[in-house]
Length: 157
Image 1 (cartoon, rainbow, N blue to C red):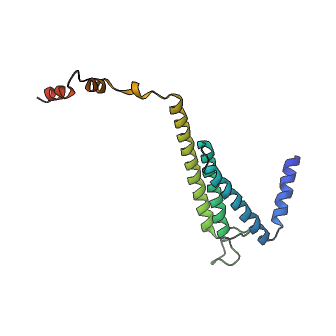
Image 2: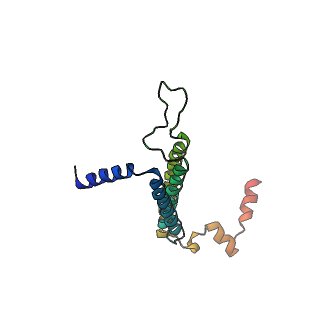
């Protein structure tokens, strides 16, 4: 076992043995930091920072839904085969389902924004000047050399 994984196991055990009210404070602090950082990044001029900000705000919302659902440790939201009703303490499955759905939607949104960012970068790199984008018919109509409408009238007759 490496030193990192041993430290991670010790940290997990330390968090698991803390009372639930201390975990509420840690969770509230984490939600606040993620929300503030996401909002700050969202207000930056860089598109990349805005995409990261949207992701952080999504994670903060997921943690908020998780916190509203209630913190229950080591309890599954599934009833055993012999149980007929849920008896407390039990974990509410609705926030877990909402969070799972929000994670999938948030990931799709981030991928869409990343693709949009890549397309924007491509367009900026290969930008065509506005004057060379005119078609031949537009140039003829602008110069007044030929009446474009005459060809249409002849084709209809």
